[in-house]
Length: 252
Ligand SMILES: [Fe+2]
Image 1 (cartoon, protein in one colour):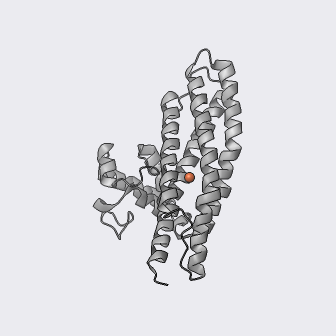
Image 2 (cartoon, helix red, strand yellow):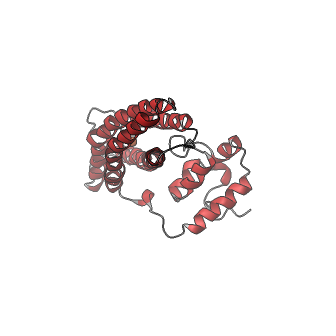
Image 3 (cartoon, protein in one colour):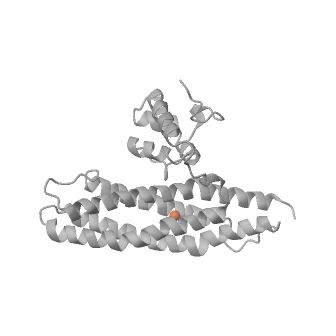
């Protein structure tokens, strides 16, 4: 068994699901395919996750090696990025995408409901679920942009200016992070519900072009949200906590 390309520095038994995605985001495609949650539940032990899905380790490693081999040299090194740059990337890339996609997908869902709602009543449920995610995400992104990301910037500046951060009444950064993580779980659950309602985005035989397009858009929305949550839960948040802990431990 060749585990060299998995992570030579770690014992396979101690790896968490998220470790592999942090190392190479292309591993996310493999986890998506296997139905393993790498973002909200990225903290899970890899061995445990494989056992739950009844996937033999040997097969998994072979698949992972293929992913690593085919994507060699084209991976963004998110875990090495400056924290402000990463936060800004999330805002520009992922928050921007959500703000553009929500009105478009909502309009397409309405069109599909008007044309097929009577025959396929679950479309109404998908619409309601999507409207709930959209509302939650808009407020979630605003909290990150107005509260959490400026706090991260403050910590990065404190480090750069060699100053101990003053506590601004938020206790520790762990508090707003806990809240954001709870909201990620809620958004992830709602998307899972949409997956169940649509039987994994399986189109009915008589689906029209808009129906097809809407399912594609919903699937893209899900993939984008998974990546977005991964970048925050598995990279940005732990690094911000580590930064704060380090700065508070310094005696000044
Ligand atoms: Fe978030």
